[in-house]
Image (cartoon, rainbow, N blue to C red; front, side, top):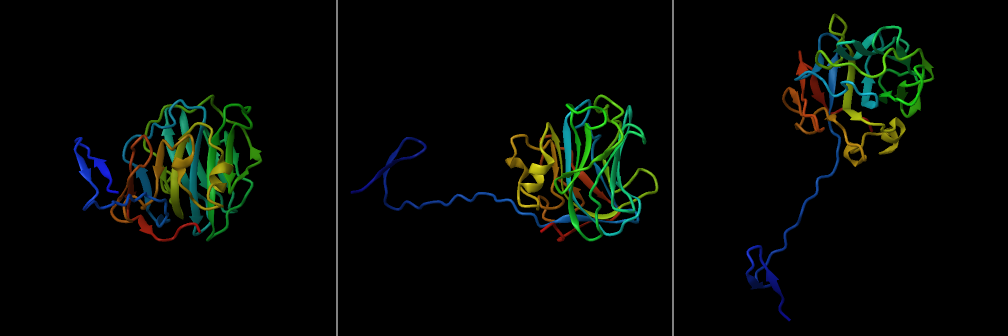
Length: 249
């Protein structure tokens, strides 16, 4: 028996000569990271980084592989009420401070040269001033913290820098899948999402406000990393920072 179909404009046609169209769905893949050489390479947002302005609940998620271990900057952001600064010590421990040096949190896990690690910085409002500012490495919360010297984040006064401390310090590491969530997304859930390697962050109920895939949405070419989050603040590669095919596996 012949079948009849109604087209988009209301016409009734038979099934002769119809061709079925296949619909392709985009699947997540991770092929690129960015390599910083420790000499003068770094990344910076194109515009002032205001995602964290006056927020009291957020998570910064990233995958990093350090190629040396000296005192190296990871993230740097100036605000009107102090500086947010994250760095790795020569023993592989990560510190994050805001809004001054004695207001910090510290990781328990020590990073090793040449290993990919998932690093999250989390501000969590229900904790007290000694527990609300946290560093998680590979799903493990750090247990060494001083205190958080503010009720929430201030208003940003500049761009977000990756691998530079806005002075003479540069980081020698690879960075991949850097994302910022506004809301309480569990660092452990991010780490476990794809069995300890990066996954599609849009699968979370709270999706990223910023998500820089470090080349995967730019075919590993050029000097711009397109922000896949809702805030649309792209990142620029500075002084020869390069896309490479070295990723967490």
